[in-house]
Amino acid sequence: MPEHKVGTQEEFDAALEELRKKEKELTHRGDEVTRERQALPWVRVEKDYRFETGDGEKSLADLFDGRSQLLIYHFMFGPDWTGGCPVCSSIADSIAPNAPHLKARDTTPVFSSRGPIEKLLAYRDRMGWDIDWVSADTEFHRDLGYFYTEGELRPFLDSGKIPPTVPQNAEMCGVDSARYVAEGPGLTVYALDDGSVYRTYQTTARGLEGPAMAYYGLLDRTPAGRNEPPDEPLWVRRHDEY
Image (cartoon, rainbow, N blue to C red; front, top):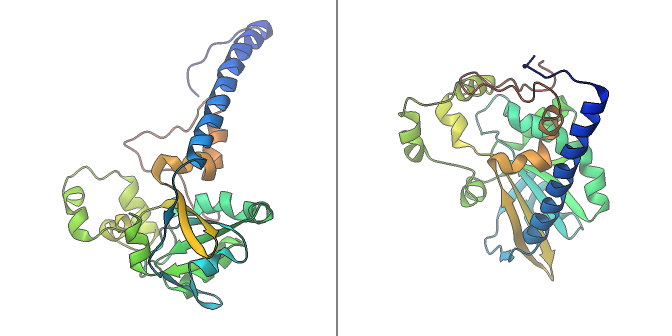
């Protein structure tokens, strides 16, 4: 456990009251950022992207499934991988259970990966997620910045500064580090308006923590916090592998 101060109940209550003021300020700031996020200009999607699904080939507009909003999580699962990225899997654990609530608010959640649809659906069944998953062509993920060529990655791969998390996760996915980091995680949001599809929001990296990594918010409220030393492999595993 980390070093900590021991005090009286009165001292705890006083310090907590001050902290709650700051937490409330942070909430209000979050509301402001949300308004700015929702005010972003929409970008019309001009390309005719195609996706393989459990029900055959579909267009991007088809993925809305009768709703006007579409939320796609770009899940790291390459064509030759033996399993999905453990971190993406932990994110999916947060998104999938919320699918009924999102659908109730006119929003269809979908996972998208470059892996073959048979692998994706088999892995989904293993994980117990009740959510649509599609196999996208490389162009869709690359256009959004979620796929990189080995040439583009070569400076990073040759830098000698690869975090220990990378080879660890690569091994868990049955691939080498180059093929692991070729895939990227991300969240994109779309609107269907008058027959046209528009991209309205996009995020990756730490931008995924708030909406899709609920366990971090909970750990941030414990004394030890995340406890993730930068020189050690990440602790996150698939939920059936702890």
